[in-house]
Image (cartoon, rainbow, N blue to C red; front, side, top):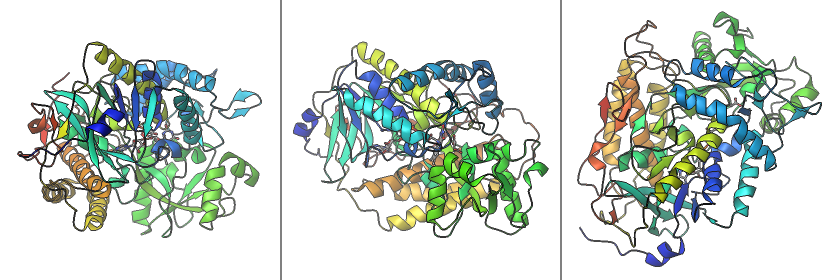
Length: 558
Ligand code: FAD
Ligand code: SIN
């Protein structure tokens, strides 16, 4: 194989001790922590404000109110996770969460207050009012704004926007940097670093209907998997019950907080139905509400149900949900006067790159935090509003662990070149593949799954995965490749779990508990662990076909 000339000038210009990939809540919090320990390079595809974090509405769950207690937050989180949370991770989340939020307030975050006291809202499956919000329904925007401002004050953090990470560099079993594509010039170069922190968010775009922004294509999970890191619990995809359903609109999220304030669900005949499914009615756990909506849609042969807030005072609705009110108005729906058509949409991936409670992955030198990671906090179903908190808590922890790893004596690679896997290609009919993939996942690996639907999805995804095993030139083609690989992992894991647990619902098996339902699914691509010298494989010029290995039992690194 021939070697592509390295772009060493660019490499030197961006030399960093720590590479943080992703500028959502998790990446920002990590970068701030690392800024005291060396040179940090903050890398993000597209604009640095484009992330799921920026769109988060409902709020951030934290046990800070007088009526609350970290023990109750812990119990609620574990109950939501259906036996698959790692209790030590949940303990870290709820115990360190209050400190992280107080810190954010100290940096200038303004959470809404009533009568001089923080206004704690209620959301599904929380037994206390514990959701802090900002500007009604703009919580993520406020948190990102404050973290961004804080990070921009740190001179040791440099920013590289519009740079797409293609692949992780693994040398002798240790992650030592990343291969990056400059989106404007099309050049690719390797960025060496002493540790890499992955904070690339989720993968909602693999589904035809999703609340996630276009950037949520699962890149971090796909590249970590190709690099040899372990993925865990990929079958657990959370579907949000209420996304706007209009032929002309994207599935814009209608926050669960709307139901927390008394919003009701009605089928197309106008009947309230949630009481028939769960004693908590519209505030039942998220997976229960999503499946109840699914059943009502099937029973009434409709593509949506309605969310009704017309019984609440119009001034309250406008003040409490300003973003939602104005966005719906843009689609000619005045939510104070009309019922809102809604249906479920893919929202959050509980699985991801397996980490321990310090954010370390199974690949030395690689740390992960936020939605890309499976920290053990969410189990089979995430408790609403726990993920912004997770990003702060585990972003900070992963940074501390990366700092300790580097203190152990890793050096920067002197120069790295990309191993040439042949000419970079254009993926033919990339848009068509993307759309077919999204429809396949929605239809066969969605809210309701069966052994047959999963088997046929896995077969199709295997064919597509073979078809994308080539080196691509553009960001969009590379994203489609990542989406195919992540979708394949989700489908494989879902097929392995022959049981209904939390967000994973198999219509072809009974709800009866089976042995092994508390085991985690582990995916690892054992063929591709290391590169023996200072070069990077871009995951395409590979000699060995990636193989999905399914372990039926516990994770090997437990
Ligand atoms: P993100 O915020 O998604 O950031 C990912 C970053 O990685 C981005 O900067 C992206 O550009 C970058 N990136 C990705 N791939 C690459 C690549 N290949 N190269 C370079 N950069 C890359 N959770 C709550 O707790 N409360 C809520 O109220 C809430 N509301 C939500 C509302 C919506 C509409 C959505 C979509 C999610 C909501 N969630 C909420 C979930 C929560 O927002 C996310 O789980 C969380 O913000 C994820 O943060 P993160 O830092 O892990 O990733
Ligand atoms: C919402 O506002 O409903 C989203 C909250 C979350 O996903 O945590």
